[in-house]
Image (cartoon, rainbow, N blue to C red):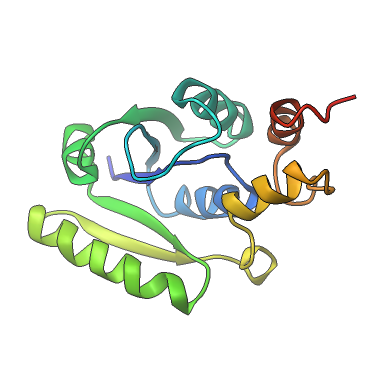
Length: 161
C-alpha cells in the first residue's frame, strides 16, 4: 500500500487544504492527515479541536485518516509506513522554506520522498492565519473554509448568533 502523510497544524483546516487532500488521494492508496501537536505556532484551536474539525471536513473523502503527532514528521511517517510526505505550495515564497524542509527530511530519512502539490489559483492567497484574522473581524469566510470550521471560528470569536 502506497501511504503518504500530509502534516500540518490545520489551525484551522481550509478549502485549500481540502483541495490538496483530494488531489493527494488520487496519487496514493492512503493519505494520513497528521495534525502537528508541537510547533512554533500558538494555535487558536486545541489539538483535539483541530483533529475533530479535520475529521468532519474530510468525512466524504475516501482513503484518508486523521492522526496527531509530536516530534519529527519523518519519524511519524516512518511509523505509518509512508513512502511520501505531501506539502502544499501556494506561491514562490512558500517554495524556499518547503525546499529546505524537504532537503532536511531527505537527510533524516533518505527513503521518504516529498511531493509538492501546487494549490489551485483559487486558493493561492488562503492561509489559516488570514482566515482567523478575517473571522476575528467578522468577515464572511464561508468560501474559504468548510461549514463546520466557519461555525467553530465564529464560536471562538463569540460572533455566532
